[in-house]
Amino acid sequence: MESEPMSYGGYVWPRNPARVRVERARNVAQFALPGGTGAVQETGAAPLRVSGEGCFTGEDCREQYARLAAAFAAGGTGPLRLPGMAPLRAVFVSLSLKGEPGPGRADYEFLFLEDARAQEDDRREPPEPFVCRGGETLWEIAAENGASVDDLLSLNPQIEWPDALEAGEEVALP
Image (cartoon, rainbow, N blue to C red):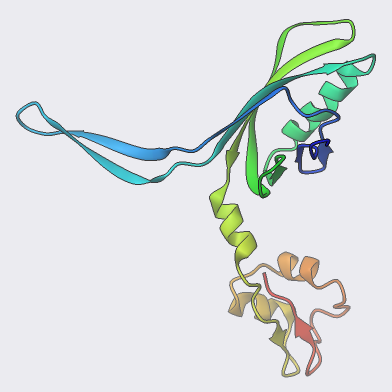
């Protein structure tokens, strides 16, 4: 039985990395107390760390590494899918080419950190759309709802006349 492929954003590994480590930890603060003793306080769960290493092989190994490097260079938060785990939102933190790439071989290491805030945003229910009473402008709706006009325009491509909205017209909110 073949394992599902690992992926991040739009990048899918042609062959899963040889080693993947998923690390769960807690954030802990240590405090010095008078008398030479100390105290420890847990401050919550640390972001999930996903690290690993692999090797691209074949004539196109440098192109495979370049595609992975492009996924890293894109930045931001994206969906990370690991075999046997639920997808998570993560930031691609580091990518290293190990050693001298030889003909037909490129070894690499990577690190992802879970972006729990982005996952909470993904689970959040989208707000109800604003229903126009007639005569409103997109600028007024943006100001009332703490949004930018550009955000509203990108969410509502159906709006042809942002300064003349009709009664009953719905405006999706961010």
